[in-house]
Length: 168
Image (cartoon, rainbow, N blue to C red; front, side, top):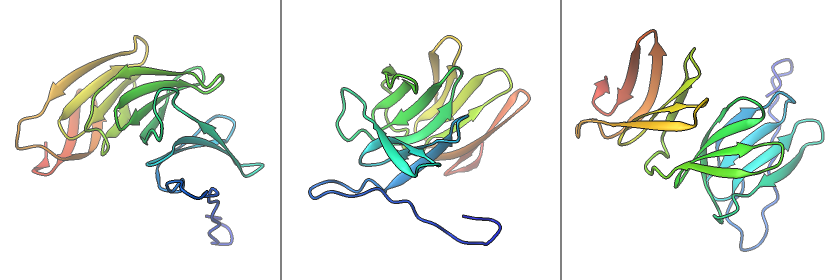
């Protein structure tokens, strides 16, 4: 969207016969070079060059049609990716993927990085803390009545979580 002239411009990817829709976008993340990383449901991760308007695929080596639901930038050219079968780190320089955890149920995950570099992840079954310095997860399951989590806010020593049962 161009804020000056209030005009929308679409940059769809070409869809080939017998290919699932590559334009089913779930998440976006901009890097320091102004490239936009695009997470899709059916075709994984792409980098969109905002200057040349071209896409580059970042295929997960061990998964075909790997969904990417959430992206958050880490340090030194790495990103944390939330997919249909867990969490991965991606080295955006060489394209190397590393699976960090095989949690499932995080399609609706909310991600938040606090002032200490801790990434908080809320999803269907609980809250996870990811320390990007040590590449470790700590998982805390929710009570059974809070099964659907959509958002979170971290402030000081509290985490506020929006669930199907209201604010927790």
